[in-house]
Image 1: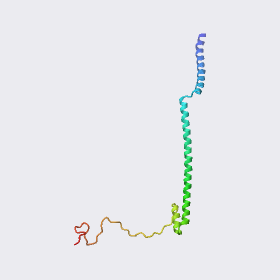
Image 2: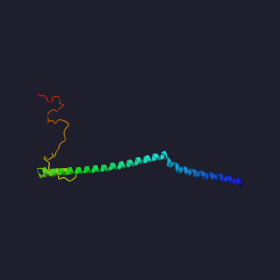
Image 3: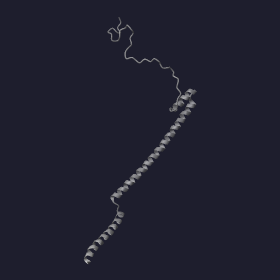
Image 4: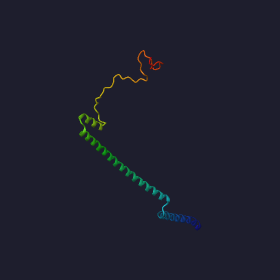
Length: 145
């Protein structure tokens, strides 16, 4: 009986000792020297954090520049409107200048200097000729008699 107890007890003690030794080795070794996978993961995480910070900085500076651009645009619009009010010789010219500054506003129709021709004739691709006169393809065209 003692022999069968030893057959069972020896593997169990070996298994328990192996688990304890494995646990101690696993606890102590990763703290001493991290694996290359962990180092690579830390490096990738650091690069990602740096990239995110750069993106945030980029969009913040872009927003500031767009705000400055729109403020400059408003300043130019105010300057042009002030110049139109001060420098326009008459009210009609002043209204035209101010309307040109705001093209999205509805503009009153302007008077034309010359009215368009009502019966506009399309251009001809040949020379017109008088009745009973030779055409351009006639052999006597343009010759004096």
